[in-house]
Amino acid sequence: MSDLISGKNILIISPEPWDHIFVSKHHYAVELSKKNKVFFLNPPGKSTFMRKTDFPNLFEVNYVGFIRGLRFFPKYIQKRITNRVFKSLQKLVSVNFNIVWSFDNSVFFRFDALPEGVLCISHIVDLNQDFEFEVASETSDFCFGTTSQIVAKQLKYNDDSYLLTHGVMLPEKAPEPVQLPGFNKLKAMYIGNLSMPYIDWKIIHSVVKKKSECDFVFVGSNGDNFTEKRNPYHKFKKQVYQSKNTYFLPRIASSDIPNYLQSADVLFLAYQEKYHLDQANPHKVMEYLLSAKPIILTYTVEYVGISNHLFMSKSNEEWADLWDDLQSKVSKWDKENTGALTSAYAKSNSYSNQLLKIEQAISR
Image (cartoon, rainbow, N blue to C red):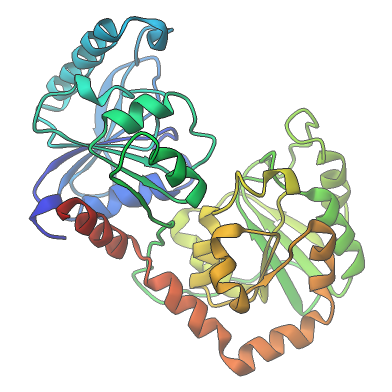
């Protein structure tokens, strides 16, 4: 990083708390803390306090948030209240913020309320971050988005909007494979929140039945959540859960993810077709790519450019067909060393490299 993002006091505004399984907001905070003092602001809660994290120069900040319905107030009142909350946070942590880096446009969406000289970045990595999108984009200095769809929308309000795919945190040491459950030689793995509404458990169930010679390992929280209100396909998830060749493991630390991915023969992702645009660039795909393992996934538009290195279906009906001749696919993948290409692509998008790209955009 150059002096643009070095030696600064940075407030990161996140829609997920610090104790959430690490995703892009957390990884950016960790990377930025190597050359800055970073304050990770959790979603509004019941109390206001700051505490250290396990990372030097990185602090978790909690606050009670704003009065309800702030977005309905006149602009000048929004600005006054936003400025007041901002000053109270500076007082709490005893610094003046140089940069406000927001991944959440439901709070601090009016950046024009902040003091002059504070660099304001609206960084939207999820399409469902669609609260005060227009105001946040228009009043920030720079906008970044992880999909073409997000950036096209940002450009309506801010010319300084840029496409930046998800980053990946490079492990400090080579992954150490772990012992996975099951009796089959082939192991397929999915890692993530297992109660997400996007997951297509129906097609997963069809493949689990079809590929009895493969163990399917699911790693993440909410493995035993079958609430159909959350995901109508949870009725199929229950059948997957009860299958003889499936194993549901609890959530693991982010630092352990490379070890688990390295232990699998194939990684997969299956989202319902109606969410293909919403989930055009899932964070986990970059971690999958880094592992150099074969990946079978439903249509994921931001990775079409490297689809010759992936097994990607155009429709969910075709997804199950990608599992045919799985053993030969895995063997061919290893023989042709395709994984080295996918891993190199992921490394080119490490969080340190993503910050360099952001600095280049700001310097322009």
